[in-house]
Image (cartoon, rainbow, N blue to C red):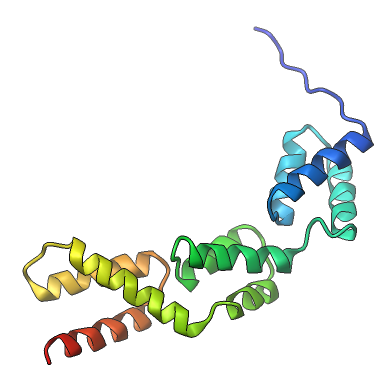
Length: 163
């Protein structure tokens, strides 16, 4: 069997590749750390490269968290719980998570939830209203919306539908 050998990278090549990796899109420390290890670097090289990238402004956890949360909310219509879990999985600090969530406008958040509910109502063909409501709620909760907010919104919409 042929053994694959990793190509040795000079410190300048490492920095250049890391700059390019971070410049392509916003990255968190954990993503960069994983990428550096995949290039065959040792812990000391990885940590010094990350420190350099932070100093140069290529890595900024707060900026990453805000960009990530805003993008996942606006584009994918994720709820706050799913965003929080994904940021935690990337080892983002609670402070940065809080800052990121504060960027989400509450009015837009509620409108997004209502949009998802309305789209799901059209999609589900269930005749039993309770089962249909339950399926919609589970779907919204799985998208990361808070269960109490989902149920309150559904109750409000159902009471308006009955008028």
